[in-house]
Image (cartoon, rainbow, N blue to C red; front, top):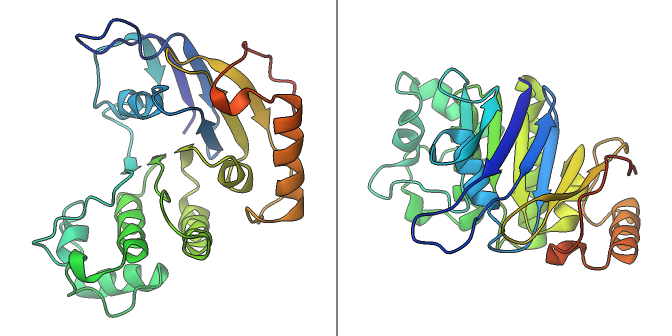
Length: 248
């Protein structure tokens, strides 16, 4: 599903300044786009607008909305603690059989956990359930709001592989918000860097390297160092809008 985003202005009630300025981009069908920028830049607000959870903004969207099958993975797994894993999954897919639940959990490395309650699972295991839940709707558009935040490197790497396996069948258009530039460079086809609030696009960075790649691969380290050397203020959200001419 092709997604066209054209947010011209977003201000939260009671705030003295806009959260998002002009933020416009296109994500092609099946493309994996990472959005990187400083804290408070409006990245999560942007995802909520795209998901239709926030309609109080100026601008428009094409490709999102009520008719699109949407998967959303939040910063926290958001599993209901009083429901077991199977019933948490059935919140989005009520007709799942026990066999389908077990098969889905096996895909994400969680065999024999259907009857477990979320508080008995590790943080990484809970995030696996959250990823699986997002894919049960067979999303055309997948929104990921820092889903790997606060995980140790080995756990994060294992979840990157889970995400890649789940995406392989459906190839949803995917937007990932992250503060981790190495994570963005490892996972995405393209990285959009946004400014501090009010958010604007300051660099559109396509990545032409083949997958799979890991965040600690030498080529990812080289891209990371080259970007920071060329644009030392980039991760601070400082700079002016640049045309889509960069490539790696």
